[in-house]
Length: 129
Image 1 (tube, one colour):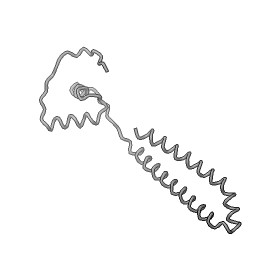
Image 2 (cartoon, helix red, strand yellow):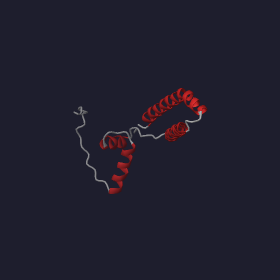
Image 3 (cartoon, one colour):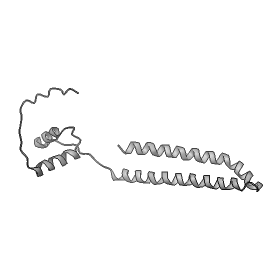
Image 4 (cartoon, helix red, strand yellow):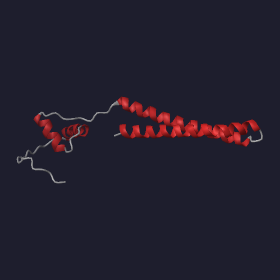
């Protein structure tokens, strides 16, 4: 990518101690400046520096979404285990009728769970950036 001509023709050569360089790099890493020289220039000229910001409430939201996704998976697994157990008890006609009638409910449950999971993944992707 070619840089545009900014008219900057003067050079400043600085010598820093390791501690000063560490402080400069820490500040640079916290900023949104693309280059260390941009950060140093803005810092020296007293211009505003845009810093990265981490919203902790979003972190809490992502953690809760992760917990909910785990809970949804557990519910689905438990449901499948219960239905499998009922299938093994096929001699009892009431269970057979219940299994057949609950098939539609099962499909609705898993469709809703899949929609919730997809929504959670979209939220996580959006807020993780």
